[in-house]
Image 1: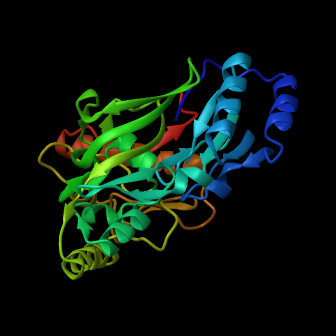
Image 2: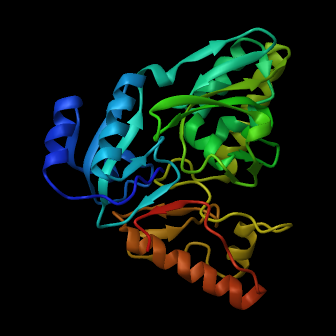
Image 3: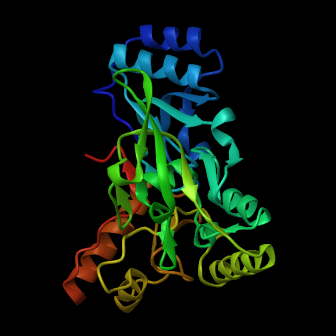
Length: 309
């Protein structure tokens, strides 16, 4: 997510947006664009298909003090019930490209979904990114939060990241040494990520595909991938597993309104019956309180809450 000062609600920027990006939609429910299927309407929603459209949108937002929200695949976001005051955007088109370079390197657009990237690389005999196959979301979002599993994170593969600077309306290339990646975070937060170059490893296609299938199978067996959720709700504290803490606190399967702590994996909250954001946040606070009382551990959110005070 990128914030551009505070959103102003004058109608002038809406008409300007329609002029420069005619396919923009207004008062668009964001529940249609997140894996949680939760969230009120954004003032506007637009899919950005190339760099020129991006430049137009960012200039309008900057000049009119309108807030921008970059959705990625919407797989790590809880949108508040009152929605978002500003323009919610998603990169598409040219940002969905994958280009294979020399030396086992691959250039990937920010809008490419991680499973798609891993599979395409495996078909070319390029591995090292297999742990990412089960991570929902896009490459851009994965870079911002350094997505991954215990077997590997995307930050460890990065050669460079291409970003768009809202001030100068131009692109910048950041080398790996200029970016700090940590557990489920990076200093790319707040930047508009366009894509990256990753360093992979040449290997047998069959061996890579076998590892990919193992990761997929493990996810199928342990995570509720067929329900509406955002993946892990909380970050794992050092040396601990949140799912185990929540389960031992007696909360596995706990329900509030239309949301529940997954009976399959206690670090997942599911929208199983037209849940509201307030239902999810009630379970978040319940889990935090019970885990704090029982174990003295403070839980930190991994999902991003849009509209949180």
